[in-house]
Length: 327
Image (cartoon, rainbow, N blue to C red; front, side):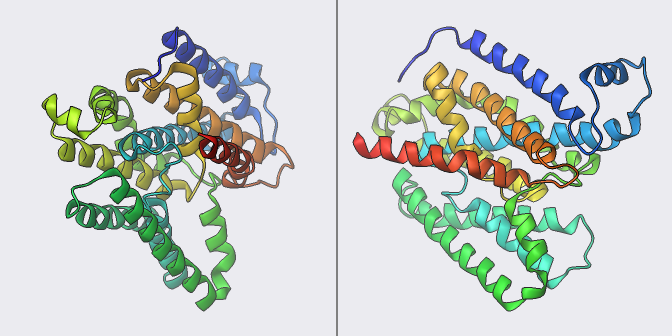
């Protein structure tokens, strides 16, 4: 277990950086708002652009921070319980399961209420998680079993998504936009969906020591009195909830759950007490920057945040893959 110096200082620095980026992000868009005007609006000394800030940009900024942190923490948990540094929410098939159910609703029920989509996406994530637990339980919930079953389930869901897109080509554009991952049009109503994530993210620190014990190996963990299966399932359930709610709100945004834990591990080491909060802060910063760039490159046209994270994350994934092959 690696250890780094000054973890609290690093976390504080990232929180300050996140605050600065958040203020900058509030000003980016079709209508530019200066940081001074933003601070004046927040303090109540000015009413300029109040409608834009409070009805569109502030809730969007909060959603980006919560979802970025959720995906990063979920990725750190999965890398710990699967003992695979290349693991992410995509590996266990949860993202693909949520995507399959959401695509089904988008194509088969295009006129359904806007609330149906996030509900369907979360149900899809939950169904995949339940199937994953059932299959893995028979094999003792070993890390490699969870990973292999997750990859297989993800492949099946991806095939289902492609089938719907080929079978119903008229709605492909809407489907592709959702699958790419975008924060466009998200507001206060979506924040209520993320309330469980807001509660779980600080709560997961309680399980930090148990995640560290699991990393020592099942035999040592059992010798220390831990119920490894139970702890692994609890942690997996938390990761599924965080991922499922995130995908339900903004669609499938990749690479955050992979990159943020690696950055956190290089900065503060692998001790979960520090790794989880630093990874969450890095993930929030990553998605907020991606969404800000998507809005600001060619306004008023928006580039989905999922495309920006893929452009940044894909080369980093190849770097990680090459480094792991050299070990």
